[in-house]
Image 1 (cartoon, helix red, strand yellow):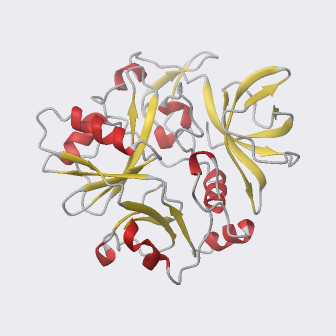
Image 2 (cartoon, rainbow, N blue to C red; image 1 turned 135 degrees about the vertical axis):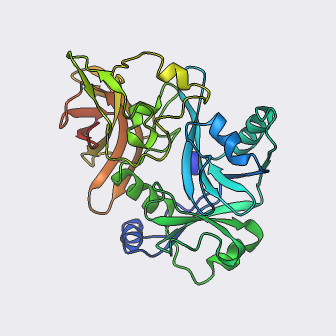
Length: 332
């Protein structure tokens, strides 16, 4: 069984590398039963969420998906929520233990919006490889397929019917999923980020300064719209009213953030996966922190990390004595 934030989930079923290959082939199911599911109902549900988060959601149609971040007053990411628009509700999942907080916060902030927020602990999240893009409400179940869904679909399944849903299906553990996520450069909020993380540190998935000029520390001004190749799913460039937005863009020409998200290729000498938050050192100086680590069936031991922006691509860092090479993600 998995440990830490994934405690209680199936880590692997005896062949984690084979399970990764299975997922790559468009087969297999991964159960994320500890993730929290929340629904918003009422005519103002999309306007309400758009006013509170970093994503402009007001024009989403039924079946469309999005990811949005909640920022604190200083512009740091508190958590993210992965949304899909249903026929009579907006459904979303967030990290374990945050469902009740998300429900209370959005209820408290609804002001005059006609919307009701409900935490649904009776539902579980199931990720399925492949699947038809149009089957978002198949068999009475809501399905989410976002740019951050790793080519699969996330189903909101009643726990009472979970065994029936899984009957006859090929299972894979969360190790296989996490290895594919790291290989894709897709950060997980709370694992690959910390309390100081801002959207622009994590690339286009959380990009908030797209189409805005930045001041290069080396001098000069340029326009940068692609800090990385990650899909721009979580932050809208013109979303200006959400909490924390002003803190991120309060200067007319914001400098590039001091940290950036990178992929690490570890040397394989670690006897176990290193925990998130492990300091990274370069020439005796701490230059960042490790996020999630996993063993990939093709790439070997890999991880995501936040490092100082001036750390060059290909630099070697040390994580708890384990050497790792830095790989830049896109144009980050």
